[in-house]
Each structure stands twice: as C-alpha cells, then as structure tokens.
Image (cartoon, rainbow, N blue to C red; front, side, top):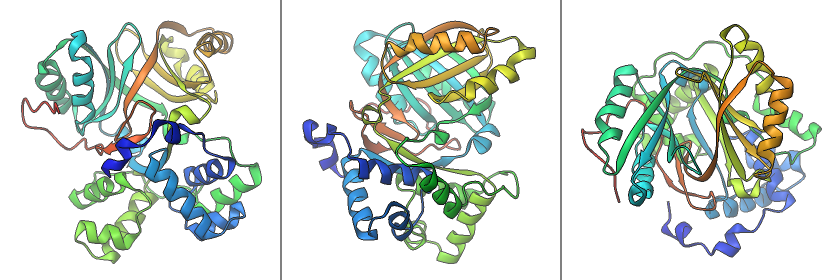
Amino acid sequence: MDNAMESLDVKDSAAELDETDLAITHALQIAPRASWTTVGEVLGLSAVTAARRWNRISRQGTAWVTATGSPALWGSLCNAFIDVDCEPSERGRVALALARDPRTKSVMELASGRDIHVNVITRDLPGLSRFVLDHVSRLPGVVRVNTQVTTRILTAGNDWRLDALPRAQRSRLQSLAGEAAPRTAAPGPLDAPDRELLLALAEDARLPVTDLAERLDSSQTAVRRRLARLERTGAVAFRGEVAQHITGWPVTSLLWARVPVGRRRQVCERLGRMPDVRLLTATSGETNVLLSAWLHSVDSVLDLEDRISAECPELEIADHGIVLRTVKRQGWILDSLGRRTECVPIDPWCDLPEGAARFH
C-alpha cells in the first residue's frame, strides 16, 4: 500500500462518509465486482462519479473490497481461535507479529480476560499444531496460549451489510450480481494457480481479469476460467469491508457460551438471525459456541446479552470480552481507526520457517 495512506490526517480520514459514499460501499458489498456502469445505473449516478468517489474512499483506507476463501472452503481446512497472554510490554509487538502471519484471519486486542484473540486457519491439524506449539508459543513475550478448534462456521462476516440502500436497489444489485444463484458444486481442493489467484484478489477484489492475468503471468482466458470456477463452486468469498468506526456499530463484543449439544442447531439458527451478529461458530473446548457482534455502544453489550437470554434460554454465557483494537481483519492490517494499511493475504497453505517471528 502507498505509504501516504499511513500518514493521512486523522481529522480528514475520520470524517464520516456521506450518503452517496455509503450507498456505493453498500452496493459493492452486494455486488463486489459489478462494473461502474452497473453501480451507477442502480444508484442514479454516472459511472465516472461512482468510480471517482470509490477511488477516494479506497485510497483513504476507509472502505475496500477484498476476497478470501469462503466459509465452505475454510470449513474443509482447520480453523481455530487462539487466546494469547503476553508480557505487558510485548503485547503490541506480539499482536503485530501475529497479524503479519499469513495463517491468521483476524487479530484483536481485548479489554480483559485475554490479551490477544486470534482467528487462525491452517491446511490441517498438524499445521495448526506447528503454528501454536512451534511458532506462537515461542514468540518473545508470550506467556500463555489457549486454543479452541472450530468445528463449524455457522455465520460469517462476509454476510454483513451496511443499511444504506432501499430494498428495490438491493434486490436489483443481487439480481445483476447473481448473488442468489445456486452453487453448481462444492469447493474442492485448490491447486497452486487457484491459490495464487485467491491471494491476488485479496489486495483488490475488483481487479479486472487483464490485470490479474498480468500479475499471475497467465493468459486472460485461463484466469477468467479459474475465477468463474471459484465463484461457481463457492470457493471464494468477496467482501466489501468498511472501517468500523464509521458504520454506526463501532464496538466489537465477543461472547463465549455453552449450549446443550442436542439444542445447538436450533439455538444457533436463532442467534444467526440477529442483525448485529457477524460471526458465529461451533467450537471445541470448555465452551462450544463463539459469537462476535458489532454493536452501537458498550452499553449495547448488556442489551445483546438480554436478547440472547430471552430468545435462547438454553444458552449459558460463560464469558464476554470487548475489543480494544482490531489489528487485523480478513487479511488486512488496520490502523487505530480501523482503516486498512497493509495487506497480508490469508494463506492456510503457507508454513513459515521455524521461529520466523515477524517483528518490525
């Protein structure tokens, strides 16, 4: 990324997006690779205006479009949540080292109970063992590591949307983008060119096929065919991301809970319908459900717990945490305002050399 992004004036970049900016961002959440002509027609803008506004937003790091493996693809690999406790003086350095590891999807610093919460994905359980035992546990300043393996991803953050467009415009974009089209197959193992394409899309998922082909030193026909297959099989998930502080939901809350195994499916279906829930997974360990929510305020944490208790009386909340800072989200390192600064694409197939702690 351009170094200028890191030196943006905080006052200017923290300004909220106007209604047109939010509408464009919402449109790209629904149809991430739609042409500017399509976006403009739906929103009543010229293609030039839509592109110009998005380029400004994107350069500021306030909103962006990325791509990762889909929940279905990740579910075929090994996902886990790792809680890391550190020496106080090393906390920031450890968090950044973990964020710069391509096996991590997200890295958060928490207010209490846990110093750092990490979502990690590896190609298999031995890969997770190497990551936890041979890498994380040996980082300078780490004093304790606790791991919960994800047994199923129930709700994923790529389904989360801004509420900036009326129903008619949302429906039209969904139709044009084919968002509701049925998948013709299930994601299978990706070969090396597929993985390279996925990593190339992480930095900018709106890159045209011509640019992707140049970056990958491949033909446009081959790239177009591979991209179509990744989309058709549901292996790739395109995500329109926004700096959290401007969304109206600036607070992230994590909840660890226990649900009777026989009631887990019904309870999780109810939890997944709550609009502020971004991530919901079944996990191994002392608790068997982990939930992440974006909320309007810290006070809303109690409201969320009350709603969960009312709608899911079988669920027992074992612990909750408030996120102080999201260091990395879905392959992007963020600044203190949640703006993107550095791309570290998620690469479960990458095993770093032993002891390669990426302190900078």
